[in-house]
Image 1 (tube, rainbow, N blue to C red):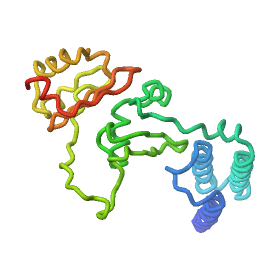
Image 2 (tube, rainbow, N blue to C red):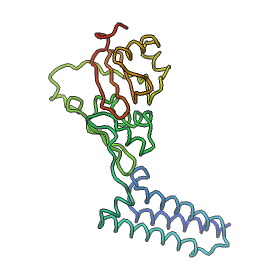
Image 3 (cartoon, rainbow, N blue to C red):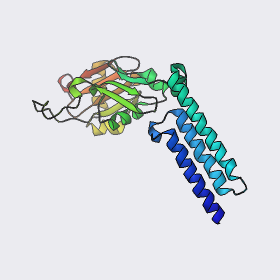
Image 4 (cartoon, rainbow, N blue to C red):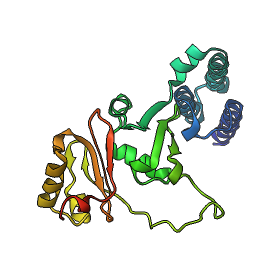
Length: 237
């Protein structure tokens, strides 16, 4: 029992030292190759802890080799751009001044719901607030807001802005979201009236949102987005 206790302490301290040598970044900030190495280290560390038949050195040696591999890869990615792009990939623009980059979403295996969730985590709630949204190589999103939506200090604000409206995503990737239609206080007839007025088809739409003030944001697949300040001035709802 004492032997197992001692082995666990030694392995724990060893793994802690190795992870500290790899850097202070959290899992969410790691590059793909760093995540893989970290997961393998975690798996290998459990073997000498639970199996006393494995010599302690044989348990620590693979961990040291992985840390060495990490150091070599990190060094190479610092020195060579091609290797860096191969190991870490490139940032991908998913929202541009034209709207949502549909092909980029497909390449990243993301859907509209994933994109919406991510921009909300960046404190933006509508695509018309965003100039660029970029998925970084560690999977996190960076957002460049439009100038009128950029954070402002109290000194910058000279006029009272209307309260923000949370948009209802009533169409996502060619599918009508019935719960959102109801939440927007619409029905199928009103939705069809809006689409008919704008000459749109549900199956062709990448996204269609409307807020309580009547502001509409929509984009057809592989086309630029469109913004209407108040659809109620054009269509009776």
